[in-house]
Amino acid sequence: MILTDQQILAEIERGNIIIEPYDRTCLGTNSYDVHLGRYLATYRDKVLDARKHNEIDVFEIPAEGFVLQPGTLYLGVTEEYTESHAHVPFLEGKSSVGRLGIDIHATAGKGDIGFCNTWTLEISVSMPVRVYHLMPVGQLIYFAVQGNVETFYNRKANAKYNERTEKPVESMMWKNKF
Image (cartoon, rainbow, N blue to C red; front, side, top):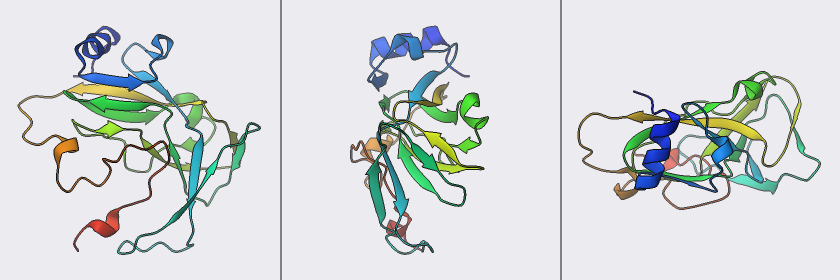
């Protein structure tokens, strides 16, 4: 079951959902709009290695915007820091963003209960497009769960994305054993 606007508001009041900064006008019928943060990043190497720590170069989006190019993976970040303590958050791109040929995530659209951070975006484009800090990019949808949670994400010993950040975070695949 997806939470409605009234249920999202009630969960914010209970402290089960935290959104910072919060703006009531960003609350939709059954979602909350999030915005592009001030930083983007690209990988340094042209060939990425899943067993290696692939480093990134982080840069600030200038006031005049930044033109994303096809064939490059950009890591972005949401302006909003979020916490979800009782619901599973899903991040989806806004239709207006999709209609510009922008994909905001490749595979990481689902958060876990206990995820407390900004959202790193895996941005790719089908044609050159200029983006801006604070432009609406996505919407968070919250799903109710059935049953009790044994281990919240922010309490997992092996959670790789718990450190609070306002910058995009590169893949931590290299920390897995394979």
